[in-house]
Amino acid sequence: MLGSSLKILVIDEDPGRAAVLEGALVEAGYTHSVTLRTNSNLHQRIMALEPDVVIIDLQNPDRDTLESMFQVSRAVQKPIAMFVDQSDDDSIRRAVNAGVSAYVVDGLKKDRVKPVVELAVSRFESFSRIVRERDEARTALAERKTIDKAKGLLMDRRRISEDEAYRMMRQTAMQQSRRLFDIAESIITAFELDAQLFGNADHG
Amino acid sequence: MVSLVKPTVRAGFVALTDCAPLVVARELGFDERAGVQLEPVRLPSWSAMRDHVAFEKLECAHMLGGLSLAMHLGLSGVKTDMVVPLLMGRGGNSITISKAIYDQSLDAKGGTYIGGRANSASLMAPVVEDRKARGLPPLRFATVHAFSSHNYELRAWLAHGGIDPDKDVELTVVPPPVMVNALMKGEIDGYCVGEPWSQLAVEAGIGCIVATKADLFPQSPEKVLAFRRAWVSGHGGEAAAVVDAVAGAMTWASVPGNHEDLAYMLSRSEYLGVDQDVILHGLMCMPRLIPGQDRLPIRHYMSFDGPGFAYPHESSALWLLAQMRRWGQAPQGLEKDASKLCDPSLIEQNVRYTVESKFRKDVGPGDNAFDGINFDGENIEEYWRSFPIGGALKAS
Image (tube, rainbow over all chains, first blue to last red; front, side, top):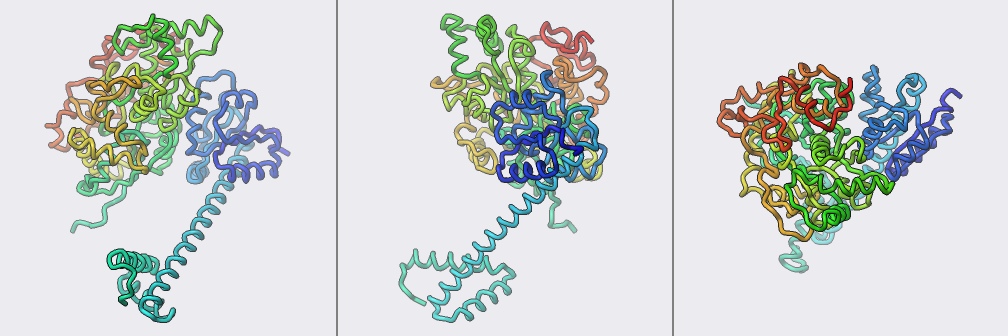
């Protein structure tokens, strides 16, 4: 396979994302890929590995160390930032948005490297989508719990049915053009304040 | 009718005390009074900052003066036309060495050391020599970026003490927020970084401050407010508003009575996430230099005020270019392009600024330099070639 002889170094602090990318690289035939998570002995590892391509999270603090290493070290062939030697503005923009930066040994043919970077970009993109969806799911779950709690408080204190409690909250939300979750939070705060000020006595 | 929705301007910053003008502009509403809404975006390193600015994820940034020039000249990352309408902070950098190396240096000098901080590298020279003689690896020092004032300060300080930064020690780069950690783990023996990351090492008992920027190049450029020129061309009014907000915030931040509030503001986790007293000691120009010793007043240790420092002189960029030439980072003949980086037009169009001391025009970036070598923006080649150490490209 064309890409299989390329030596690729992936540096990523996120073990989940690193595993996803590593798997994808191997699957695509890049069997000479190595993944590092920390900066320990970065210099020695790079000297030993002599990578053709380095893929690193744009926000990784090790990137500055890496860049300075490429600038001063004669021990490694000088890789340069992918961005510097790229006329394909759209793909760079996509890489930056995905948080991918790549360093490539000078002189390496662009068409050999492009699929590697594209692979990294697509895996970074799908990984952050998964994380976002997971966070959204967590938020949604937390919001539903809050709404249920507010409903329960209303049912208990006002001695009304679940349907009535829900309708009351919904109507308030619509009148004030606020989210149901915000109304639920206000109800809980109000009841907690009430309990603090007047004790738990039922004066409903 | 005036629109109630102010345009949002994304402004990058790195967690450092001198990002204060952006934070103050946002937190105290200098931005909205000027007609924009700043959105401070924290970035973990200067290379990330460079790329976020270059690829239009930010409109402006708290930036190393040298990095904005390197972007402008195409020496770091993608060549991007930049413009610097004002310099944002003064001083703030210190050279810290590990407690172990400091103690060894004192021992080598027989336990006493007499001499100013500007000459303190000569204190360390015997340690460097001794390691060489015994075949030990050279001392490792870090700065925050290749194109940082920190790099130029550390190199000039070493060279002044007879230590060649390219031959006698090893230099690397570590982003400011992880610098103290690198010293603690023994990955480096010393560094040059901005506050609060110098005070933090001293308070942790692991580092000693042996020189400060105020001892070396007190008038030289530090952080700047940097824009992509293409954005300014299309958003002149908004850029002027950002300058107005930042200049106002700098004035507020330079009032000693505001320093406690400022330290508290910066200490919050979304900005620096560092103890407010550690930040405050730097802001007050009363740093502790050696663990366990009293804090010392150091004139111009760091500030957002001071005669002329904020004015965007052509010669500020030329001073930085001269340092790049001295240390082999830039080819010859870039003076003309470099002199376009600093653009005073936004300052000049606001009459209020002409009475402000920080925008005085009669102070130059090379004034009061510790090495006593006169800086002349008209002839930077002669300037840097007059140093005995430096000049990787001297032969060329």
